[in-house]
Image 1 (cartoon, rainbow, N blue to C red):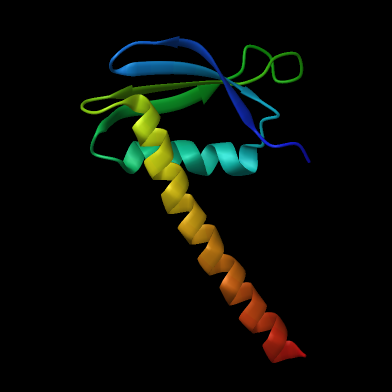
Image 2 (image 1 turned 30 degrees about the vertical axis):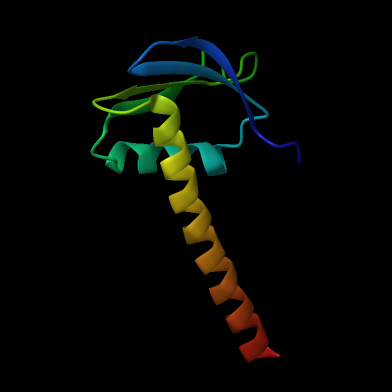
Length: 97
């Protein structure tokens, strides 16, 4: 599987709009949900013009700070969650063996 990539469509001080290349909803949905939990984020959302013919577009607007920083914060939180899930999974596999 290819890594997700982000292509900047537009940005200013409080908003960024990104095209998501090689999008994977199993990662994109939690990323957006995590950003929407952030107090500094006014909103984070994504949409498709067409689910089979276009890439999703991610739009983030922040109350303070930079929108790019909101993406990084959310990604770091998710990385920690996924690491914990992986560790828990490994423990369960060892227990079964």
